[in-house]
Amino acid sequence: MAIAVMPHAPIQPREIHPHRLPRTVQVAFDDLMAKADRAADHRDLATYADRHHEAIQLIGIRPPASGELAQCSCQNCYCGAIFDAATARTYMDGTVEFVQCETCADEHRLTGDE
Image (cartoon, rainbow, N blue to C red; front, side, top):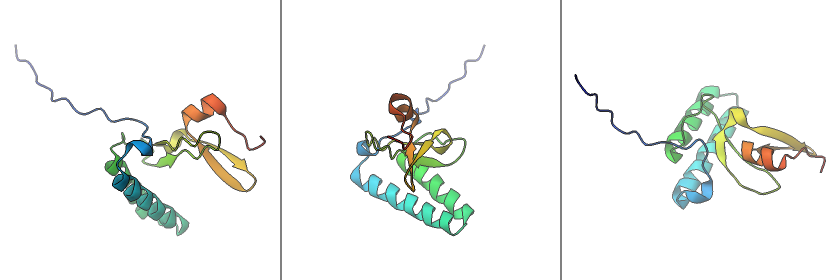
């Protein structure tokens, strides 16, 4: 009987907190996300998707099925988590939209009416 040898693949996290990344990676990530936002503003969705793909590879997060990242901008705790945009929860505070990761939404869901 033959035994298959499977190399151990590193387990990639589903969520990353930017303060745990080296400063140079944080800056490069922020730059890629800003470029993605500019591409979206110009309806250049191919470039938008490319910048998200580059950001995913840069920070070593598990590639989300949606291919899109979001960053928590919760005003209650400022966690800043980077995660799959498909799981993001949003709320409006005046005319500004904020994003909450699943943890923030579960622990202190905000609605903008606080």
